[in-house]
Image (cartoon, rainbow, N blue to C red; front, side, top):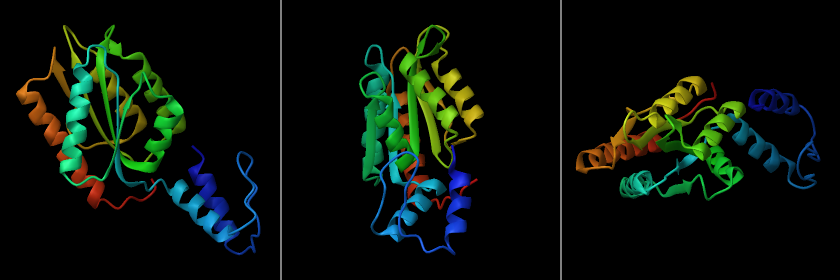
Amino acid sequence: KYVKQTQKALEKLKTVDVRMFAPTHGLIWRQHPEHIANLYDRWSRLDGDRGVVIVYGSMYGRTERMAEYIARELILAGIRHVKVYDASKTHLSYILSDIWKYRGLIIGSPAYNNGLFPTVEALTNKLEQLHIKNRLLSLFGTATWSGGGVKNLIRFAEASGLELISPPHEAKYRALEKDYEICRDIAERMASRVMNDKFKMK
C-alpha cells in the first residue's frame, strides 16, 4: 500500500550515511544497513520471485481437485516454488506473505449463495485494501445452477487492476477432462509469464 512512499524515502537516503534502520513497525536494524536498504527496495518495487501462489475455497472437494491439478502442472512446467493454500485452513496472514513474495497468483472459488466462498472473499477484500500490484492473475472455480463465484472473482480482478493472463474458467458441477485441459492451459500460461516477465512498478 505504501510502496511509492517507500521508494521516495529510499531515494532520499542515497545521499545519507545510514547506520541504523528503525521502522515504525518491526525490528531495529543496527548492522548491515546496505543489505536492509536493498531488501526494502526490492519489497517496495513488488517485483516478486519466480513462484506461484494458488489460493482456493472448496465445499465438496471439487475446486480443491482443480487447484491441485493446476499445481502439478505448474511444477511440470518448471515452476519450482508453488504454494497451495486452502483459504479455510490457513490464516490470511500466511497467504498474504507468500502473495507478496511471488509473481503469480491463481485464485479458485466455488459459487456460494451466488457469490464467493467466504474465506476467498475475505482474501480478495484484503488484497484490494492493500492495493497489491505487479502480480499475474488467473481465476477458476466450480458452480452449480447459476454460479457466481468466478463472476465475482472477475469483479475483483477488474477492481484490483491485476493482469488476467488467461480466461477465467468455471467448471459446471465437477471438473471433466475438458476442464482439466483448461486447467493445464492456465498453468502453462502462468509458468511462461512467471519465468519470462521482467516487472516494473506501476
